[in-house]
Length: 408
Image (tube, rainbow, N blue to C red; front, side, top):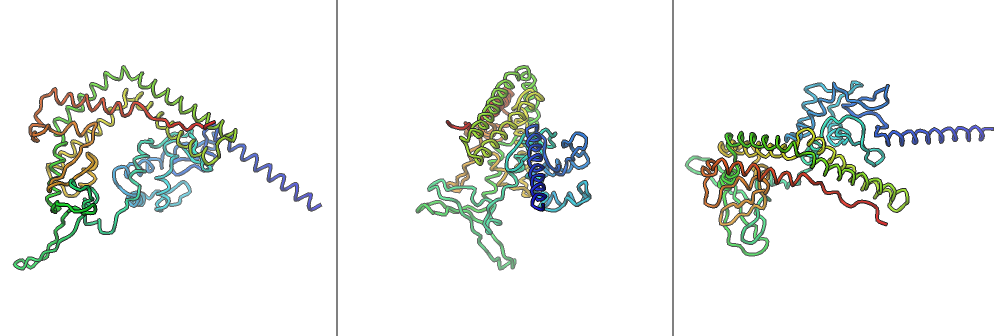
């Protein structure tokens, strides 16, 4: 009798478990999250879906914007503490680990993870995928040796003669007359690839050369304002032609959806294993979300190059202010890396290859001076706007979709 009762109990539990799994699968197919809503959202008892918690969503968005602007999770925690941020149960949301999980949660841009697999959710996003990706980039750990704290430009350059990395060292000097000690930083070739004739360069002179290189791509405020006006004029004209760009993206979107369907067929036919299926499906889903965001952006602005172009103008304009004032309270390394690459040191002179598609167009011609760059004809400035706009348009009008469908 007891065994019969146990058997009935097991049957009930198994049946209940299967019903819950079936219900979860149905919710996942509809894009509904089958669990407790994360911070910033709330479970709607009427629709059984997830809706935005307007009281707390603003803190989520601010947290992501802070990290995108160069802050760190500790700064977000201090902000949460100052605002006394709590969840709906009254529990503090200021724990460091909780903030880290929040900043890594794809749920906030419309994609959620369940049992190791990503799904496109129906919930309204709090942030864009572009902002999320920028935050993930800023959150990546930076591998620095303990002695790099004193050498801002260590690892930035290579020797122009032998190709070895540039190392740095500190020299100490005592001035008897003034009775003080001084430290000086010098950069030199590490000579790891053999003998080299290059001499050392002081850190102060290197900073001055970086400022001089930044001036080459600096944009005065008057020119920046013209750039914005001209760009908006071009954008107005291209809004009429934006339908073609949307059609291209819609074709790519359909292609991505088709690959997801074929991937599912391969998984159901046991052509592809579950781990590989989840990995490839997640990649395609992320691609699909990116394409959808670009379509919405074009529908909203009429093109997909104006926003990155305006960001380029803002950066070049900010560089003008920094280079002119020679500000020391900013990271020169990060700034110069944002405009150039392949830094070489030859005969105590820093050479920079400015990034194509914008900053290289601002560099004055060979033998030109900073003033000649600023006082070019209006036609030259107008051509720069058009050339950079075309490059940015080519870079954003096509999204590569890898061939991730199962192979027969």
